[in-house]
Length: 131
Image (cartoon, rainbow, N blue to C red; front, top):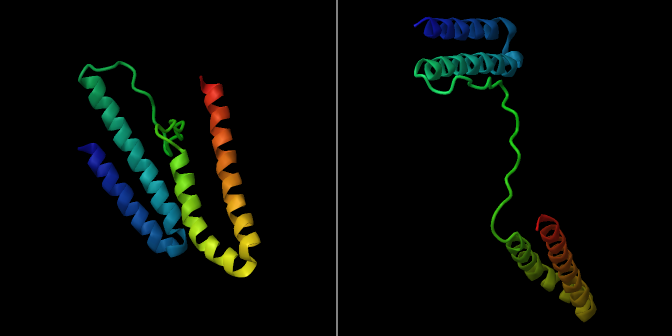
């Protein structure tokens, strides 16, 4: 019950500080309150886990949380490139054909083809390093 009173007091103090300092400090006050709230919640969870006899060591999570390593995506990363190329290719075809004729059309699609080939070669290199 003590934690609830502490949280309520922190909230009241934050609201009073906002009234005193004005709206330009609102963001900093909200962040400060959120950090204190997160610390209170983490402490409560640690206490309950230890009381339940679970893992004796519960890591100390601090706010803001540290970014996690990005997991490698499964699937084919070439699909967005292919769809993007088609999406760009349709209007580019109309513009290139009307402004540059056949030469403009060949240059536009040649650029799209080069981008797709470069992406495919990059995927082959990355695949070789992973295997």
